[in-house]
Length: 388
Image (cartoon, rainbow, N blue to C red; front, side, top):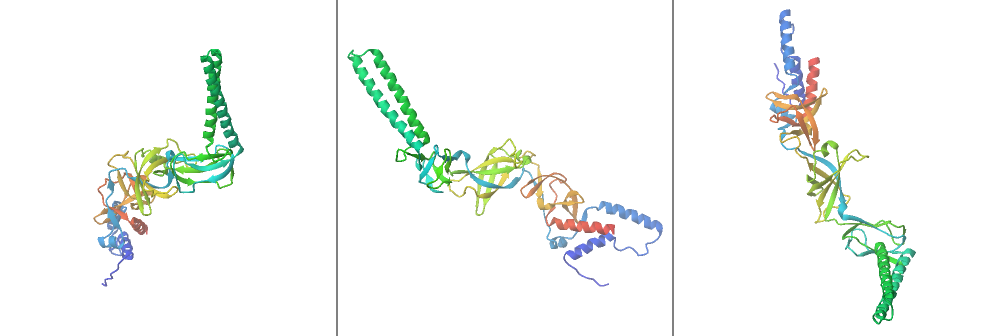
C-alpha cells in the first residue's frame, strides 16, 4: 500500500471527510442483523460527537489557530470614538453688546489673552449715546454736589432753612445714582475704545482664542459672536454611549484616551439621564488634564471606558474573535484531547475587543481565540460529509 504524505488545510479537510464517512468497513457489509446493529451504534456515536472536530496539535498549528483561557473577573471596558472639546465651564463666547462696525481686533486664533484685556473695538452711534449719557450724568452729579455744599454752608450760617439742604442732599443722591447707572450701561457694553463713539470689548477670562468668526470692518448685530475663548488647562471629551453601557458607567469612571503617539487618563464627570433625541444615545462628558497642551480642541481620539462591576467579579469575557455562529447558535470552540468542540454560549454586551458571556463556559476552559472561523468552516464540511 502506497503512503501519501500531505500537509496543510487539504489533509485536514480530507481527514474530516474520511472520519465522517466511516472509513474501513467491508464493501459488501455482512448480514442484515449486523447492518442494523452497527447502523444504530454509528448514529448514537455521531450524535455524541456532534460539534466535535478531531485535530492533531500539528494540524492546529498549521491552521494558525491560537488558544487561550477566558478572562474571569472585572467588568471590562468599551472603546468608542470621541472628540476633544473645550471644558464647558472654562469656555466663553465674547459677543458684541451693541450693534456697530468692528474697527479693531487685537487677538488672532491660538493667541493667549488675559482677563480684562481689550480684544476688540466697536464703533457705533449707540456707543456715542451711552458715553454721552455718562458725561451728562457726571456733570449733573458735579452740579448737585456743588449745590449740596452751598446749602450746607448756608444752613450752618442760618441763612437757608433745613428743608433746602435736605432737597439738595436728595438731588445729589439721585444724580449719583444716575451717574452709576450710566457707567454700568457702558461697562455692560464694553468700555474704553479710544473715542466717544467707540467701545472696547474685554476678555471675560484668561485663556486662548479658539474661534474668531468676524473680520475687520464687518458690521455686526448686538450679541453677535466676536471671539470664543477657552482655558485649555482642562479639556473635555464628548462621548455617546449605548443605553445598556451608560448604566454601567458612573461619574469618576476611568477613561483611557488614545491618539497617535499620546495616551492619558480622564475621568467621567457627567452621564446624561436622558437620551439624545437625534442619536438615541446617552451623552456623557469626561474631563482631561491638559496643562501640557498636548490635546487640541476638535481632535478625534479613541476613548476606552472602564465599566463598573455591576455583574460581579465572576464575569467571564472572551475575545470577540472566539465567538462564531453555527446553525443559528452562538458557539465558542473549546479545546478537547482530540481537537475542539463547538460549545453553545449566551453572550452579553461587547466590551471593546471582548464579549461578555452570560452562560456556557465556567471560565477554566481552553478555547480557540484566533482563526476560530477555520474551525467553523471545517465543522460545516464535516456535517456536509455526514449528510453525504
